[in-house]
Image 1 (cartoon, helix red, strand yellow):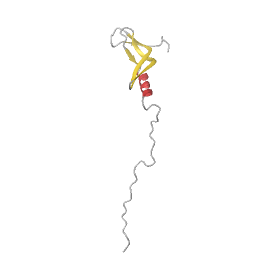
Image 2: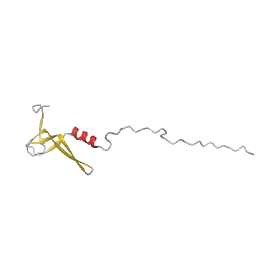
Image 3: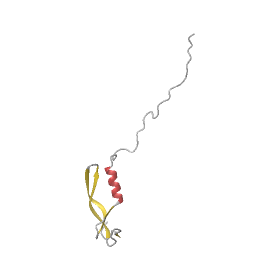
Image 4: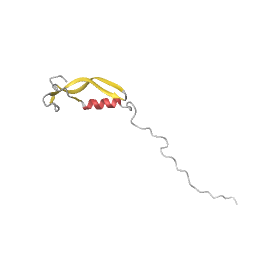
Length: 96
């Protein structure tokens, strides 16, 4: 998308500036590790500098950083999902 086609929005924080799409470095924590993501899409105010991160990009990043990323979402079914009931047939002794 070229700059001429990009939309801009009024800033809800300072109400004087305009939010425009920029690609900045995004910082987040993963446990006790700092993760930096270059070229991350964000809407940035030209007056106050307020940043609103692109929601789809944040969700995508959260999926990538998830501890279950790359794992199958389907649980394997066990061969015997429930314990088999034992027969409760009472056998009478035929010994006399």
